[in-house]
Amino acid sequence: MSSAAQTRLLVLCVDRDNDLFEKTGISSPVIGRDACLKAAEALALADPEEADANAIFAAIKEYDTLKSKGFAPEVAIVTGKFAGGVESDAKVRDELMQVKATFPVEGVVFVSDGFEDEYLLPIVQTIIPIFSVRRVVIKHSGRVEESYVVLGKYLKMLIFDPRYSKYFLGIPGLFLLIFASLILVGFVNQAMLGALFFVGILLTIRGFGVDALLGKAKKLSPSSYIRVFSVLGMIIMFIVAFYRGFTAIGLTPEYKIVASDPSRLPEFLSLLSGLMIENGLLYMWIGGGIYYMGHILYTFIRESLYRAFKYTVGIITLILLYFPLMELSQVLKDPTRSPFSVVSTLLMGLALLFVILSFAYLKIAERRSK
Image (tube, rainbow, N blue to C red; front, side, top):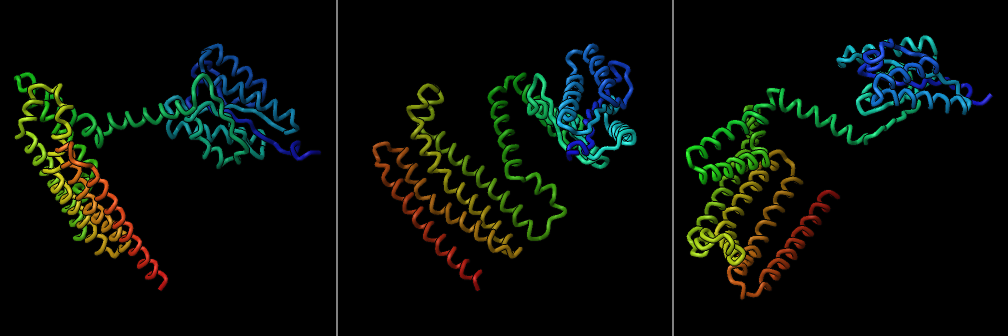
């Protein structure tokens, strides 16, 4: 007798939301090929588009295939409850225990018609070992179904969970009301400017994790306030940098020309960009330096020398990039000026950074070897 003939397998189809009973009135568990075939036909007639019917047919086909290969299989259908949840999964577990008592098996061939049914695999595994899993994909991509399930859960959480709805619905709703009110009273330009500032502030706060830092302020250790200061200091310097840049641009006659005739923007874009970089770069780089210095102090206090070194490299990189960017601003302001100075300063900075990093790496390797 072959080993296959000695292997008793259960081909299991799980209808987690109990469509079988809801649409045909057939109670579960359903055990045996003939009973499962009648159930599949009844469900297919009740709803030809029902995926569970196709899954049952696939389970019957799997049963026939295993039997032809010499296994000792049985096929069964177990169902949960329409409402889902813990009670539904408990019902699946109870019915599977009944099936196991009727037909003792060594393993389960789990036939699934979708992503949601496979949540039950751990439950099945606690009762009967999983021998194999067969995925039945019908008329749609399994990945698309998974994406819709995940997307639906996140949308439900964003709309109905108070922890997230106040951010996802409340703040945007308040902003839209203010924006509409400004337009209603004729302050269209002010509304547009306010919208840009509002979105910019939100993106900056979320992008640099300011909200997370402020939310944890009560739990911060004394050294952690250094990081908070460094992030806030960087944001302030970024605001100053943009203010300086836009102020410098606004005082030029070229800006007035562009403001009156936006179609001429390409003509003066190089000059205006150069002025923006020239007047704002120093303050932006100071902000970056404050950020890196704060994190160096924080990591040094925490005795994380590798991270302190990483942030030190960031400061060195900022310094070395400052000079080629300033040269770039001059080239943008004066197109007749040769761009060779930008290239040369970039190459010099890259070479110097390589030398510094190589020396630091050798020192660190030497220290570790000792």
